[in-house]
Image 1 (cartoon, rainbow, N blue to C red):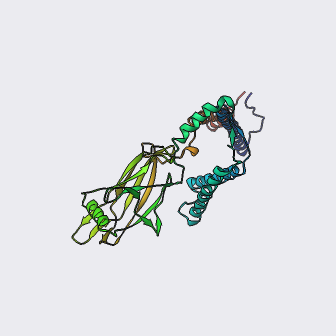
Image 2 (image 1 turned 180 degrees about the vertical axis):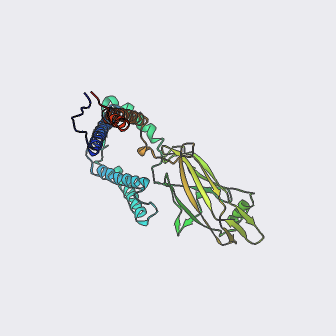
Image 3 (image 1 turned 90 degrees about the vertical axis):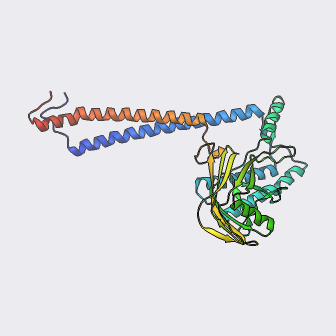
Length: 358
């Protein structure tokens, strides 16, 4: 029997409270189940990664003061770059740039000490049956070292006489222009046109008779014998060349395509903005934006350490779909039960007060 005439009808507040209580119970069960599944997935991925590393190298960690100090500095640097990537801090702030520069300098000073230390031993001792395989893997990785997030990206330009490649002839507030890998930032360049050859290059570029050819390295490997490859970057200037001076557009944007630490392509183009009058011996002030894309499409760049592995992403998508299905099913069940027990009776009684359920 669902309803009895002698039984007191439940108050509206009681019905609403019952519905809210059931909804909260369903939500808590769903959240708890999702957290358990997520923790299990992450634990499995971590265990698989540890097993792969151990089986591939057979490594046993050893204590080394210099190596431990290097690892500590690299950990601080990685955390700093992670905070930059997530937006917690801004790399353009002087204090952040100074801290990153000090970490880089400390790592550079520490490297010779590690190499010259007679007591220095590798941080890992490889098992005899895995030495050859691990050596092959390390050699392959050594020859293809990608760029790290936030590290300076060298940009070289062809000299006006086309004889050599030199760093970009720009200064940013009396300092060399620095473009950091994978970090969107502003671009400022003060180009001194101090020689006739440099002024002629800019004049011909504005007249679209010559191009300013530059390049960036695809990877960051600088060991002896490693053949480096470069991606071309042609800088275009927009303006008007007159007899004794130039009218040059001052806005230039840089666009980089990268994937997993490797450069795929780059471009620099002029965008209409303000025009500056430049004469021989003057300073051309350029500004713009530097933006990074991931892969061949126009999507924001995501560095590999912060990229979710495809297997984990697929499992999390399955967890989210299962969680949504369970929540939908429980919600439909609760609403159906509430409708059958309370709402349906109330609707019928509103039109027929004499209705009774036996």
